[in-house]
Length: 494
Ligand code: UN1
Image 1 (cartoon, rainbow, N blue to C red):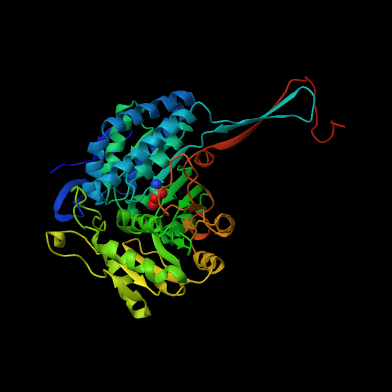
Image 2 (image 1 turned 45 degrees about the vertical axis):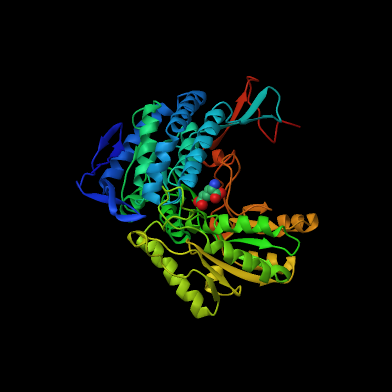
């Protein structure tokens, strides 16, 4: 069996405790893919010390040179795309088509970061005084603690790590403990691309041991976390003791609206992809479908017919449309919410059970599930499930649709299907979400655009594109007075 290690201060090493945990295939839970170090605070301390030391030289490496390493990382990821995708499918379960996309998102992020090394624009601004020069430049912050989820085992770590590095920060990285292998391959690639000793460190293990130790550490200057809203709130509280900068990318209860004038075939393809792609385990997954009453019955018929044809199975097989849930506990959450939906009086129109037969009983499979006649105040319409469960709500107007869509504590992604340009623009203006799609599903964010949400989906930061560079750098305002005399701002400028 493969034994994987932490990477601290330029060396592969075991956890100080010597303990390990197993990584298993969610499509076949009997298959152990490898063991990983079960780390604790001592391991984190060592990684943070290494990152702190490396920061002193890394911050002085010219940003275009830091970007050159990202370019190499992108090239290596491109060469190994297939190999990385299949390792990811084995540990996470989603189908190969999607894991290839996940790796591609990492490649896109690498090339964007490489080019940003030659920008990292600051500002020059005229001074109010003569013979004085004003500028604001971006400076690195220090040690970045990155805590990432299992649903995008490559893309999300790269969203955080590459901008952090290009900005001149060093990294202590804790990947989700159910997808540690993809994260380890990412580190191997960084090493091959020439990342200097101590600049990137990976510490495997659980959230309460490794994650908390990173968040609480005095020498960790910023935290970037993607995961549940509950954990995000805890991190926010924990980090407040040291007032470190925190970026949180949390839950969603994303909805797709289908108006009566929509192209129903297109809306159908979109909702199937949005709700059951990644087995519904995306922050951006379509978890509510809001349908105009005039097309409700027709659309439901089309939806159920297509959903029943989706093929569950091992994500490595070309015949599979939908893979397993990532773990037993994730599937238990799905089972629980199906019971909640039934008790609340929603109408189960499709799926609703765990999947068995053809070896599916060895994995954490659950049937794609649809509830019809869901009311906006039901728990299945309000709470994030993170599984293959879709709640369908009937509405009478665009105004009502937007009101229902906004009636949630979250605000990540949203989508509207209509041919009416006035309705589309009204929706773009009035929907409370970080991302709005018109005539496209709620999933499919591109790496060079801002990514994030409003309300309890986050704390106001954005990943992706140019915006993430604001999080990973600090503005330094510089005044250069070349007048040779004391000039007092606000006083000597009359
Ligand atoms: C997530 O679900 O956490 O837009 C990220 C999408 C992907 C990223 C999802 N590109 O669905």
